[in-house]
Image (cartoon, rainbow, N blue to C red; front, side):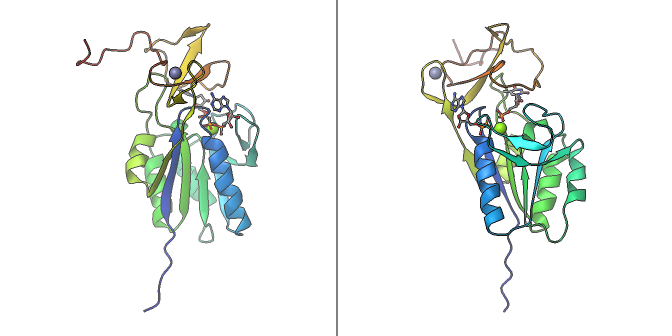
Length: 199
Ligand code: ADP
Ligand code: TMP
Ligand code: MG
Ligand code: ZN
């Protein structure tokens, strides 16, 4: 019987800000380019932080990308020859992104996505948690806690030199002027409802 090579799959790269998610995404993109694979890179239009039509890391690695307003539009940029789709800043896409990623994988495309698993509140950041459960492969990276230098799994938002309050809006595009990598113990969110088991 003829063997069919099915390469459709979902890979998730996640963790807090500064963990190297974008660097790892770019590394996988470059590797696929070396293998002469047809690859399309996307990011949400809302992310205008370092460049408009490039995915850029905090350390200035960069690669060309297509800006997307509605996640469903991603499907218009792929065809039967597309081998790999890479998507950065997944947390900024609308709810359809989960179906879009699933659809691409079922069309035999390797889909590599990267994004935050927690918002500044330390709560799950939709839609990465959904994709973590659907993915074939998950890499949860850590940064360095700026306070104690332990592994950082969380992102601290700073507003006017103070920790942002729990009821601040979830979305605020930014980098070092507004955000720090912190470990669980150094992360603080004034106004966060207490865990019902904590004393
Ligand atoms: P992400 O997309 O996860 O936010 P990037 O891939 O854009 O991360 O950037 C990772 C780079 O950020 C690191 O290689 C390092 O140069 C830089 N960096 C800045 N602050 C930190 C930190 N607190 N911990 C680790 N890396 C940091
Ligand atoms: P990064 O993971 O590539 O560093 O980028 C994360 C982006 O997400 C950055 O623009 C800041 C933004 N962000 C929010 O909008 N809300 C949040 O709660 C957090 C932690 C980050
Ligand atoms: Mg990034
Ligand atoms: Zn710490």
